[in-house]
Structure formats: structure tokens, C-alpha cells
Amino acid sequence: MDLAAVIVIVVVALSFDFTNGFHDAANAIATSVSTRALTPKIALAMAAVMNLIGAHMGTGVAKTVGSGIIDTPTGRGGLLVVFAALIGAIAWNLITWRLGLPTSSSHALIGGLVGAALGASTGVKWGELVDKVVIPMLVSPLIGFTIAYLLMVTILWLFRRAQPKATNRRFKVAQTASSAAMGLGHGLQDAQKTMGVIVLALVTVGYQESFDVPEWVIFSVALAMAAGTYAGGWRIIRTLGRRIVHLDSPRGFAAEVTAAGVLYATAFIWKAPISTTQTITAGVLGAGATRRLSAVRWGVARNIVVAWVLTLPGAGLVAAVIYLIAHDLFRI
Image 1 (cartoon, one colour):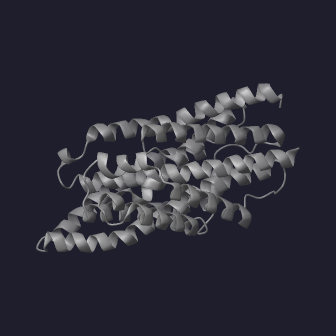
Image 2 (tube, rainbow, N blue to C red):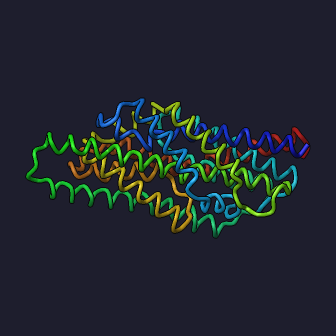
Image 3 (cartoon, rainbow, N blue to C red):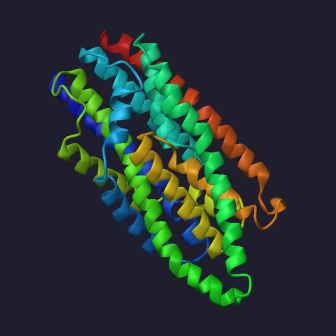
């Protein structure tokens, strides 16, 4: 019975990972597609491959998500907590994808864990949640905006005497590398969160004692995310690549390099599960603001920020309701 329940959890987790891939595909490719540095098909294929590679580059974030957000639940009731968390995150991903809003799949998953844990009266590690999730959620977009703005100002100064067409052409080539770096960062950050949830399920029923991530978990999660990324999320790609601000190749390059750097630093140094969506969106806003502040469609940006704020409680509420319904239905 426990084995069947774990298999269901793994299938649902990989389904979430697939939605993460197509929901967050825009993170890696929107700027490159909007500046015509890459064709959509090539951009998606490259992002899928880099997601696959990035998922194998570390497990620090996975351990944070698996053991650092809620107290480890036990038994079948614990599996129900993990199940409800995943359903809450998937539901939020689908809602925001339908609306074309680039919200955070990472925060949807964490919100789902917290909501399901509260519904089950399982302990939440509030100190860890604030340190590893809330503070990075607030700080990383500000850092991304500032660094992207300063990097773009530097690029404008360095190439102030260059021919615009030639400069744009060179940066289109550079965007191939920066887009690949974003794909790698997305796999490094977002794949690990799903790994952490699967390992949490395994520890819950005693299939393993530590939060070390088995290779089969890494590979299956990486494959599901790569498949989801290749499927694409065109509604969000249009929002991030075109509706916020008009980007040229130098600004697209600045946004991607900045976002990738923030993703690597938080994954390797602080092992914090930050949002790739928030990071690249902030980078786009920062690079775009160098054109002039009025070039940014702040109304669209405001809607995105509102969706960011609502993600944790929104996904948590859905997960809590799912838990309570399933608990009464299955009498667990």
C-alpha cells in the first residue's frame, strides 16, 4: 500500500515538474526569442538540454526543500501532505499559465508544502522559511534589477562609439551563451525542488533515512523538466519577452547574464530555493529601464508583482483544501 502511494507521489511530482518546465520555459528563452537571437524551436531545444544538465549539478537546494521547510511528516498521512502540496502547486501553475503571468513554480511548491502542513497540523519551520524563502524572495529581484541596470549602463558606455547594427549582431551571438546559462540555472534551481519533495516522500514512509537524492530521482526529474521545457509556455513567453518592455540584444544579454549569476550564487553558496521567474523578470526590468523608465510597462509589471505576492498563500490555500478533502475521503 505504501509502495503504491509513493509511486503515485512520484508520478504527481514528475507531473508538477513537467508543468514547471513549460511554465518556466520563458525564463530561459523569452529574451532570446523576442530579440530574434534564436528561433523558438532552437531556443526551446537548447533550454531543454541545459535544464537536463543543470539538474545534475547539485542537490543542496533539494535538501533545503525536503528537510528545511516543514517538519518531516510520517506514514500515509505524511504522504497525503506531500500529495496535497504537489496538487496545490500544479493548480497554481496552471492558473497563472492560463493568465499568462510569469509567477514562481518554486514558490508555488513551497506554498503548497506549507499549506498542506498547516491543514494537517504538521509543524512548519518558520525560521527556515523566512531565512531561505521569504528573504531571498524579496531580495533577489532587487539584486537582479540593480545588477542588470548597472551592467547595461556599462555596456552602453563601452560600446558608445560602436556601430549599432554591428553591436546588435554581436550581442545576438552572445545571447546564445547567456540563454544557455539561464537554462542551466533553471535546471540547477527548479529541478532540485521537485527532487526534494520526492525524497521527502521516501523519508516519510521510511524508504530512506537521509535526504540524499538518489540518482534515479535526479534523472527522472531532469527528464520530466526537459520535456516540459520543450513543450513550451508561449503565453508566458509573450508576457516576459514582449509585453513588459521592448528589448534589444544587448539588453537581453544583460538580463540573462545577471539572472544566471544570481541563480548560480544562491544555489551553490546559500543553497536557497529562489525563483528563476522573479530573477529573470527583474533582470528584464532593470535592463529595460536603461532605455528610459517610461519604456517599461509598469502596469504589466505591477500585475506580475501582485501574482508573485499571491503565489505562496494562493498555492498554500489550494493545498490545504486538497488535504482536508482527501483526508476526509480516504480517512487517513
